[in-house]
Length: 116
Image (cartoon, rainbow, N blue to C red):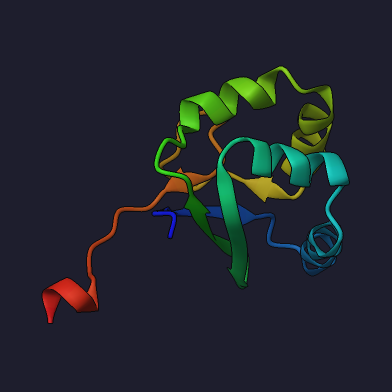
């Protein structure tokens, strides 16, 4: 069995029901090149959840996955850049994010298995 690492990230959407619906439509059928880039970076599984305009992403990755490596791969992939620019129309940074920063990694504060 392959060991995996879980990463949880958050991001906000523009608070506009029509834009949120359009964002969800894009994610019901992401571009094949985007799915390929996700897999090639070491992401084994990804889910995105939404409540109102807040998004929560869960990623299961290989142990050697690196956000820096993923960012470098994405920066050199024109199709990923096209997708990211398109998605940025719907997204907005969390209030405490750095300028231009999108998904922020969340800190795990509770684990029932180790804190019960």
